[in-house]
Length: 209
Figure 1 (tube, rainbow, N blue to C red):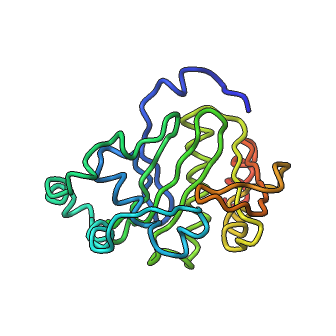
Figure 2 (figure 1 turned 90 degrees about the vertical axis):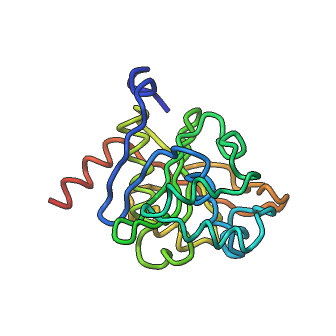
Figure 3 (figure 1 turned 120 degrees about the horizontal axis):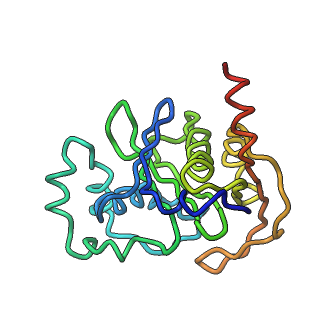
């Protein structure tokens, strides 16, 4: 991975729009908490290997945050979730995905600044409608345009066909990488890897003219 120049990383992160989503740099603890709530269901936690989550009623409360009620909800955020340091990951550009039609948090996408790895998830109600492609395109655009990276990578479980289809539809191509990956819960799974090149984004734009 090569950076075009330091100036890309020194500039503040900017919101980005896809056809149905708005990717917004996380602004406060509520943004982080609402985004993470979209991955606290059993299916997502199994794929991600997470093993801890807030109480179900707290998760549901976070899933109901919208652009219209976020100011009030920010004041009501439980004390245990108020610290941004609790959520923020070092050297990660973390964006909240907001559904443009409903103003509701649809998930998250992040780029690891050190190694250019893209990751993310969608909340349950926003899965199965093609938004995974927009998620991964947004991740590539953030990395190429705002962080100045020529190449970004993404990994997923080999059995996660929905994620693999989304990556491929977003212009990622199969790449070399470790054949197995250890999840946070200790499980080791078969992995496959993809890469997205900056020139590939330009080719996709031409194809859609």
